[in-house]
Image 1: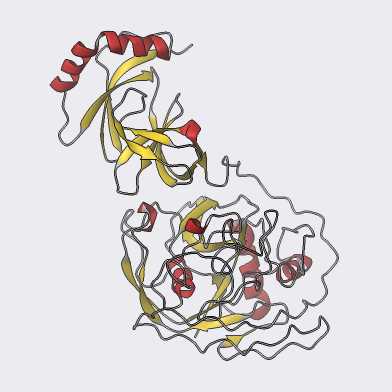
Image 2: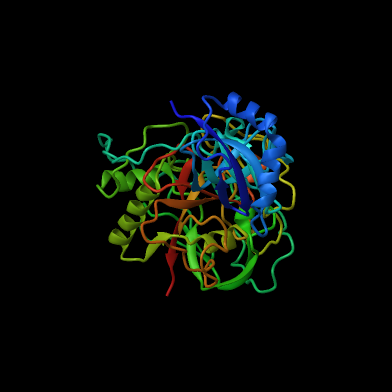
Length: 440
């Protein structure tokens, strides 16, 4: 059985160094080690004072003898209010508390203990008992090969979507943005066998089963926020014109790809009209297969949106936390705490709530939407995020970015700037997609 040793842990930001004052001494249990620290506190404090590291604070802790801090980049939800410690020990100096419901960025796992190194909202680093946290999306699932399910019979042509709902007056717009024309005039939902309604100005569709796209004019905006370390720093991005899906990809649109052999994943039959319900439980790899199929059948440069394109379209010229204002309120989106209609088992139809000022539906809540970018802990990681609207890729990327939150997310996690991620090859029930296309 591994023993425990007394160590002086010194940290600066996310970098930590371990010094052992008794390198040849180990204790059979954590309790025995803790008792030794108490009995030798004066000598240990003197040792820590004699081994300073510039710019770092030292804490006396008990660590397993083979213990290391593994570098990670993960997001966790606080499920029980916990004390933030300066080191991975209950006796380390307190650095405040994190409240239940808060989301944290985890940058390190202390081997052999439940302690996790976290980055707080003010940029400070501390340690929290991992038993009080839960990884976003639950425990990480293994990356596995995805065998296709038996294919269902080919779907019928998708029924007509409900008509567009006139959005509320938009908040103040960024002067640098030129929004496309507003959505069409509301009308009663057409019958299932009615002919397709004409597209509104600025909309286009490349094929019968292709998503309706909305033209987003070139412009610039301030990307990010100061609400969370992963959303910093706020930086200016300039983008070329592009097209983006009016809705998340529907079950009917996905089934057309699966029936044609372009998509390996066959989603099970679910609730609601497949032409209005967003497809769920797709991985980033699945999403990439779908846009590749669209490219093949249309000859158009369909793709996933970049993270900056997605946020530009979600903001729709606004500068607030949500496109409708600073507060989530009710009746704007499908999330846990956003009001009715809402079902815990599945998302609402994508057109259940009004569109944003640019005519885009369900850009908040509903399903979390894959984008093309590889996950980075913040916009400042390595050389910094692109400022030209292009995706931020990384060789050998195993985790990609999700935007918009889902019907399972609380209001604070469906803002226009909230960032999340998931394993590239792993499916999760709350994840879907919205497509983009490059314009000439």
